[in-house]
Image (tube, rainbow, N blue to C red):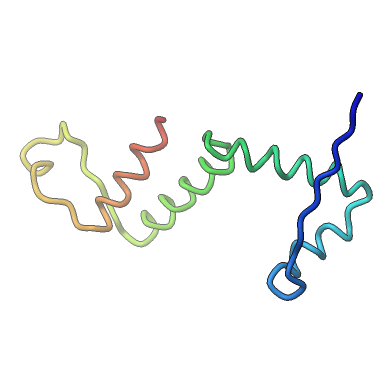
Length: 96
């Protein structure tokens, strides 16, 4: 198996969080590969994404935002507030 060495640079101030994380890794190469692979998968929906969206919906519902079903009759035809539209978008996005 041929090995390829790849290097990158960090700014000591701006990237201090990255450098601190990397310093704590027992196998830096494996940790970097895992981080890159995780970043590559970010185009797909993860469980973390779903949980974050559910948390946002819960927060909005706790603040009193209520959505009516489209089958609820003429009341459903009324315009949604911006916050209600946001909740609707979050809920619609969960079905992706």
